[in-house]
Amino acid sequence: MHSRIAGTGRYLPATVLTNDDLARRGVDTSDDWVRARTGIRQRHVAADEESTSDLALAASREALRAAGLAPPDVDLIIVATTTPDMIFPSTACILQDKLGAHGGPAFDVQAVCSGFVYALAIADGMVRTGAVRNALVVGAEIYSRILDWNDRKTCVLFGDGAGAVVLLPSDQPGILATRLYADGSHRGMLCVPGQVRNGKVAGHPFVQMDGQAVFKFAVRVLAEAADDALAACAMPRDAIDWLIPHQANLRIMDSTAKRLGIAHERVVVTVDRHANTSAASIPLALDEAVRDGRVRAGQHLMLLGVGGGFTWGSALLRWT
Ligand code: UT7
Image (cartoon, rainbow, N blue to C red; front, side):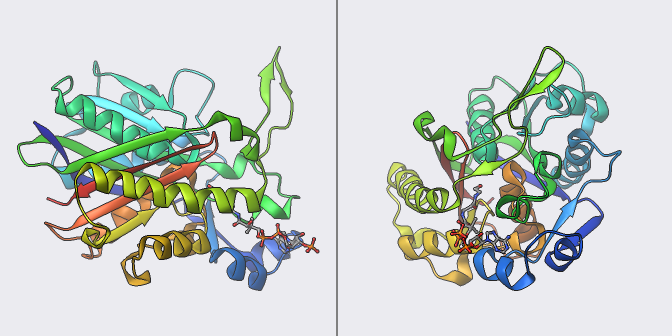
């Protein structure tokens, strides 16, 4: 038994902030600087009344519709998020209730920007072994609430959004290989080191990052993770039809593609329109490429995630 992605969906909040909007609001930056360094033009920001599970719900409904699965028939739910609705219960349990599904396993995965690849790998294993009948895998984030809007080095980089996929069992392999990695010794490179302690926020509750160190690390490990998944399937690099990397920064994506010898035209890029949405970025990009017809049956897709922890990983798919 194998698993395959049978449907995808996405949701971006209605409010859009361009780079110029940020400059007008007092961030000491410019559209030229942000575009040149990152490729980002704008980001979406959730409304006050929206929670991460609301974003996840909208993306999930689209993915379920595309897969032809009724929300109450969802079995496993995994939400990859670093910005959950609350400390507990998990956003996945809240999403399950909002979908009207009951009884199947539901939990969150916290692997920051690699969260979607981690969640997909776990769900693939559970579908393949028959532990669950199907799986809804979601990446959903509201980073705008963990950004220091006075820190221009970080606040221009992130945005809010959600993407989702539905996995069904299949006799033909859809997910060919997944590879997951972590190295906690780099945990200080990108983090939100705050916590709630005795009813108060203790420590720094906003994203902090060593941008240049993250850049170098990401390019190296993303290419390695892609090669590892290809090696597991004895496939060459030129078998990749679409590279769908974590959408953090256009320069990181271009450098990774160059290392892998993949042409720019075969990289799916959405970061320009929604900035870095952490665990949501890969399913957002995947959904766009599926819905606009770029991704076709029989093609090979390489999904690549990297993020705080540090965590990273790859998923090699054959689209069915
Ligand atoms: O999921 C992973 C998420 N992380 C990432 O994707 C980040 C990876 N890193 C990067 O993409 C880049 O390191 C950044 C885009 C974050 C920064 O680019 P950089 O070329 O490494 O710039 P820098 O940090 O070396 O800063 C260069 C200059 C500095 O000014 P001085 O000291 O040279 O006068 C910064 O203060 O750019 C300044 N700067 C800005 N200027 C305008 C930093 N942020 C901004 C800004 N607008 N938003």
